[in-house]
Amino acid sequence: MNPEFQRNLWLELSGNRLVFMPVVLSLFFLAAILISSPEWQWRALSGTAEVIFLIVAILWGTRSAAAAIPEEIRERTWDFQRLSSLAPWTMVWGKLFGATAYQWYGAAICLAVIGAAHVFGDTLAGRPLGLFLATMMMTALLGMSLSLLASLVGLRRGYANSRYEVFAYQLIGLIAALALDGWWETIGMGDTMSFMVAEATITNVAWYGANFAALDFVFVSVLVALGWILLGCRQMMRAALRVQNGPWVWIAFVLFLIVYAAGFVAPEQAFGFWADNQRTLLAFLMASGLTYAMVFLEPKEIVEFRWLTAQLGSGNYGRVFGRLPSWTWSLIMAAVALVALIAMGHQAIWNYAVADVNLVAAFGFLIRDVGIFLFFAVSARQMRGDLGALISLVVLYGVVPIIFGQTISENAMALFLPFAGEMTLVSIVSAFVQATVVWVLTTRQLSAQIAGNPS
Figure 1 (cartoon, rainbow, N blue to C red):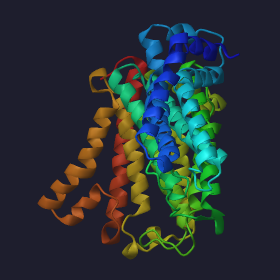
Figure 2 (cartoon, rainbow, N blue to C red):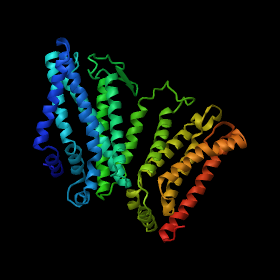
Figure 3 (cartoon, rainbow, N blue to C red):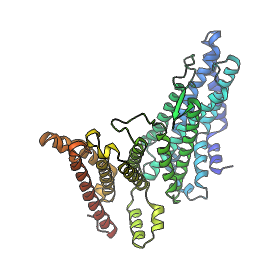
Figure 4 (cartoon, rainbow, N blue to C red):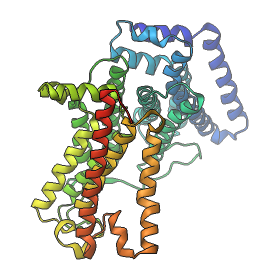
């Protein structure tokens, strides 16, 4: 048995707790039966079990998953685990299912009660029992795994053990689980807590021109999403255990997201005035968004930059390739998509009169913004951190354009926003000039840090 999972079982499933859970749940189930009329007793029992499942498996379970590693840090046992011989994947599922073992114990009782209510009272109104129970377990697992992934990301950034941070990690998983629960209801697999089974509002999904049953499509999509989340947990655990991650998993993930999302874009649809090459446009937008996300989330350490610089100087390009941060690959994919749009004559590139945003200027501002994040990362310690970068972006995108627009002219806002139309060229030139200035300053600051003379 997985030693980490076994250790958590010993901690979570004591004899008293094993007895306490079914006794308390039985009292709730008995109360639900007693206050209901005979014809509604089975539905009341099933609805009560679903409410308790929501509380135990999703609300409480996401908390336990989010706190699994922070509690180890507070109890000073995390360093011993990092020095152990346990593999990253062993650590992931040992903590994901071990730290939440008691919640899954209570959830299993609720699922058994829901199954019994369906067998004897037909509470699911013809919906397959196995599929319904599977959707509930998938919802809980999605919330727990996302909470664990968020805590691992926080650990990598150096924020992992305060109660406020644990709550933030839990909130991410909780919101995702509740959103998924809402999706189940729209495709006819919602709960029976209202004693009524709602009809599906979405029955078919169009993807790459083919129609799929909504239930089948969402079910498979959630399974795939769970696979990616668990793989992300493994990658973050590898980083926490100082095992080097290559770029291929991230590249595959970005490509998967782009291909998956592009399937929902039908040829007759359009984003605003962009009526052509929509999937390539979507690839550019998604790659740009992921660049922002990763340049914010990934740690930006001077030691890593110093190592990369040294390897570049030594001509070890293969080693540099394997250690480049994830945001670089997202930025490269955005550049490739932009070149493809230019080659295809996309309206947002050539027909300035019908485009609201010029993508070339937007890409220039993206390069500038990445440089701003890195500038604050390599600056002197009193200026270091992502908060300064975020404040700078708010000023550059919100405050400065308003000041220029009110004091000079509305067209002057194109200096700081990717405007199209008659100010397209101004916006493009301004974006790349700012990007050049920011990257020159960042490079100089990084060189000073590497030389040991930070300004």
